[in-house]
Length: 289
Image (tube, rainbow, N blue to C red):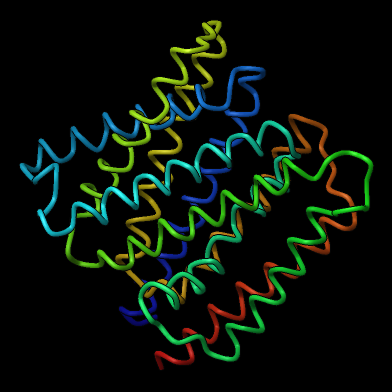
């Protein structure tokens, strides 16, 4: 095994570890029960804020970034905050695997927003992958296939839309800003957005709920930092597909702890979305070579 392959293997391991952390975070959020979604999001963001602030201070790196980038940092933080709130809502109202899968539609929205905002061209294989992903999300949402409202699934899909816009802003920032500065901005703005709503209708968590929310915050921060590290060792296009291992972990956790069995429509949707993500990853590797 050469050095480049060793780095790629390390990146894949970090990406899969990140997916496991995010899956456990989702399970903790769901286990926390009937607390408001916005209160759960507050805990998640507050812990990430403390960790990012501490790292920046220890490394003596700037908190606020460069002046010319602050509007983009703010936009990334606002869109990311909405993505988290919608995702946590979908976790509470869908089976764990479905909410995770819909949220993982974000890479496909990145393609669209990158075309609109960054003027990146869309290639034919990307268009085909988008069609596959949309078809897969349709099978998960199942409009008209069931009597219950599709609203939670549509909100779950909206979490991917806002996450896609946030990641496009991260792509724009590129090497212009420190990764921990971006995380700090996001966590700070998310905390500020959540606080007023929590004070309007505060619900005091029990000790078990508090510990679960603490666990959700720690695993979310761990997943974010592992994800950041994974992209340091290999191009995003080569390893991003391994984020979809989160669906496997989420399905297993859903079965073990919540007795959630995805139906055949959802399983078909997972296959289509995973195939679309795999296509983008493989084309990225081929293009780079």
